[in-house]
Every structure is written in structure tokens, then in C-alpha cells.
Length: 261
Image 1 (tube, rainbow, N blue to C red):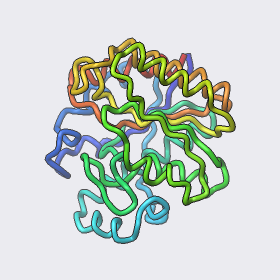
Image 2 (image 1 turned 90 degrees about the vertical axis):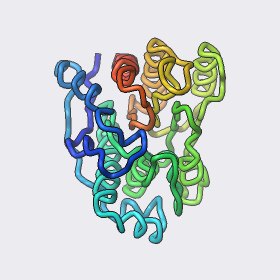
Image 3 (image 1 turned 180 degrees about the horizontal axis):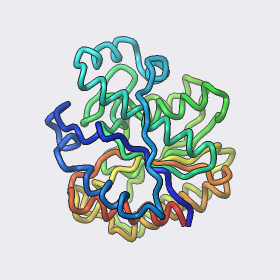
Image 4 (image 1 turned 120 degrees about the vertical axis):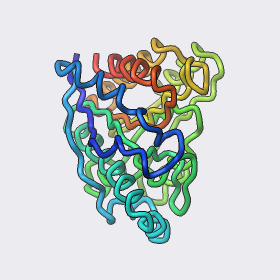
């Protein structure tokens, strides 16, 4: 089993930047307690904030300035984006990684945001690697309960010259959900990195009421398998949704076990 780099900063525990469920106190503690209890499986690395130039690859100047009007929100949103960049960089170097970050990002578009998101962490991370000529394409599996419209609007537009293949599974039965993901993965070609917008709110004990922990294990295993086939195992995940604080560490652990085997 490979060791996973966990990108985390203690400032992510701060819940004062917003009053939404993603910002709720206690949401990340269970994940990090599990990570810290298993040093043989995880290595924690501490990120720095994304620079303005990183954010502006994905967002307009107007959107950046709107977020900057709230100093605490900007601090944490830019630190979250920086965490996604660190995860992508570790994956590019050959280490599977998971960014345990907040605020989440997949509902943030170039000039707007909603759904507890402010900056599009996934887009900022991938476009950073693209700007450095490290990658020209990516596959993004967004298994959050809610479609990541921001990922689609920024990465799916193709306006940057970057090619992103994005899957938001739509199956409503758990076995069919896994088949949908694998069927899509089997058709992929010429992918430089594999990434997950990892929202766990589709879990059986969360808002979606669909996926079991063993299903998250299988999702991690599929990403592991096909990243090795497609791009020398380059793979990373960033946290999106997941609001049952008791279930979140269980589903996170299940995914990571598959992701690392």
C-alpha cells in the first residue's frame, strides 16, 4: 500500500468564515484524528496560500476582488486553493495525495460562486500545472452529490487550451453508479493526471443516501487502477462535500484505502 500525502493546515479548522454546513465546527476533526492515528499510511504536508496569479487563471479580477473584501474568507479560500495546488504537485511528482481542505470549490465559476464554494480549487490546481507545461489534460471524477458546475464551466470550456474530461455520475443505484464510473474510465486516452472532486455527501448516512463505505473504497480503487494505466499513477483528490461528521471519516478512510492499494 502506498503512503498518501495529506495536505492540511490547522487554519482549515476555522469555522468563522461562513455559517454554511461546509464551514461547520467539527467537520474536519474526525478525518484528521484518523490520519494522525495512522502515520504508517499518511504523511501530512502543510500548504501555503495560492497566489493571486494562480487564482486569476481560473477567476476574473472582479471575482477575486469580491472575495478579498472579506479578509478572513480570502485568507481561508486562498489557503484552500493553495492546498489543492500542493496536492496536484505531489501527484505530479508521483505521490498519491488528498487535500483535506475547506472551503470547497466545485461550485465556483470564473465570475460567480455558490454552494459553500468561493474559489474553484480543482481548476486553480490543474491550471497551475498546465501553466508550467507539466500537464495538458486531466480526468476529473466529481462524485459529490451535486454536479460541480464550476468545474464544468471553467475546465470544461476548453478556453484555456487545457483538455479536461469531467464525469459527474448520475446513476441512482449504487452498483450502477460504480459501473458508470468504470465504463467511463475504460474509454479514456491521453490523460496526464487523474483527480477527484471528492464530496462524500452521496453517502448512505449523508444527504444523498446512496453510497456505502465499500463503494467509496471501490471508487478509490478504480482511480488507482486507471491512473496507473493512463498516467503513471498520478492521482489526487480534494475534499468537496460531506456533512455527516460521524460518517465523513469512515467514507474518507474507505476511499483512501482503495486509492492507495
